Image 1 (cartoon, rainbow, N blue to C red):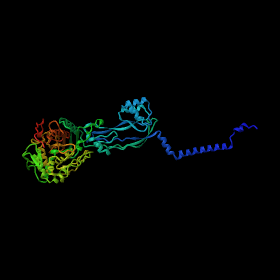
Image 2: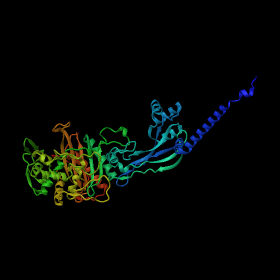
Image 3: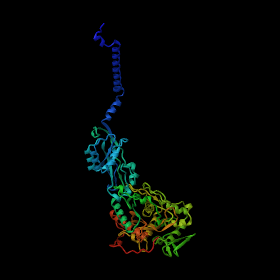
Image 4: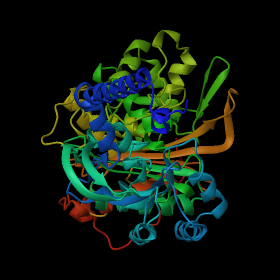
Length: 576
């Protein structure tokens, strides 16, 4: 029997039913998947879709400006572009990479290594481009290579105020000086915005601002830019002329305690950080300590006068120009014979100062030095400031108490020394110092009586008069009071004793004496041009800085009879 060809092609009934069931099952699976994706997992899918074209971009905050007391810019941030790449998205021809390397002044091998590193999603190619470079990168239109807005920190005064401002790194974080000390105030808060990018990562539309960037606060310093420039210029000349290792100058405003000028040399240019040599960023005036030499003599004399032990006319026998204490000998430059307390200051007698110090209970001298600010922070809030060394009085031996009267066995920084002299310039009141501009004069601490301070001023004024060690500190038209200092430097490497031919030369003084306005403190480290006494090395620098600063501030003359057209010939005979 022959089969019907049509019937031989027909599927069995069970097979057709199975096929229908499979089709229905497939439809059910697809429907369930659609419900899951469109209903239960809708947010995830939308995020994934948006991530293909929508991005959240960080908006950098602008760092606050640093200005001097009159608003002159000392540090400012300018917007620039940096170029970066996402190696997993980079799609560039060899010609494009070669052009990019030339534009960025990079080695082509280094560039390829960076942009083809598939283990990274973000690599900087070059930071803070010039406008021409940024435009050139944009014109290359390389997929996976992007431009990012950043800020470049610029310091208009360069090396003149570098030790005050410090600097911020390439990411805008303070590293030294004021930039570091007031980082929390200067830095802002970054913002963000949502943008739409095309397939090669270019922003084609800004959708919304999620959070606006909050710029940092501006900071107004106490510095007077003109006085700062003057101090830096004259210090640089003095260091070079004396073939010294380094030097520092501080100019303080007596009524307010504000720092009007602070210079160190050698200095550095914060705009050229790649050229900075090790050690040049250190603010020596605050982070270096030294033995102040005879500039400390007025403090022993002041406390002895305060407690009634002596007066300016009390006589001391200093013959034969030396004083033995145990196995040690204290010497003057020459035998000064019998001299008054005023002459101890004027002629800088070590023997006289030691005898005065030994009249005092150790605790009394220690309290005077401590209340004058030695051995403790100045309040300038400068990062890395050293407190110096003022040993506890109960550990003093007689020789240590004696030598401390003329600045050996104690270490200070220059800011402490400048601040301490506000005692004599401000009627016995120790002024707190500030690197920020103040709205009103602060209340200081009364350390000695006004009468003692005035008596010390009269004695300190004789230092810059004939017979004194600081004659070269005179300022044309002004009465000046101050004190010279010369100290051997301690041996390095933890060795005890002092180097024979290495000195610290200092001068600290104020003017005009009739109504003190400025304190200027000078320190020259290791002068080696022949002269090393403070009266020959530091006093002339004091005169130049004080003279220029008083003129800049238009402070009236108080010694009209002393105005001369040329400096007097000076011959230094002795120095403490």
